[in-house]
Image 1 (cartoon, rainbow, N blue to C red):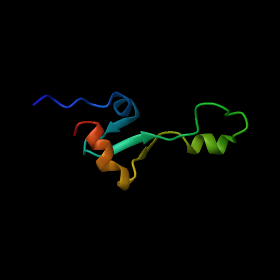
Image 2: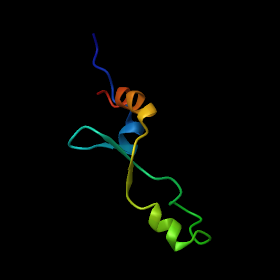
Image 3: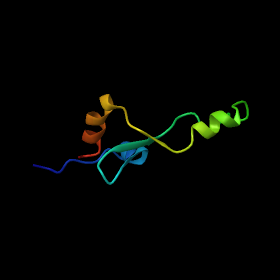
Image 4: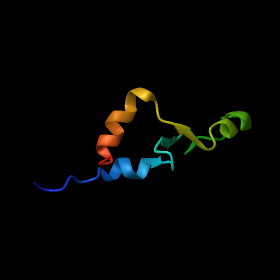
Length: 64
């Protein structure tokens, strides 16, 4: 049976922590930032945990 391939788009968007949890970047911080307040752009910094409902599907795409 052939090996499963990792979904490359998913691999670029998600990171697995040391404990095995999934992290993702927050949306809304790429462009059109001029009209967004500094408070909003600061809030969008860093990574966010992936929703529980999505974890199984993303793990499958990552080949885990």
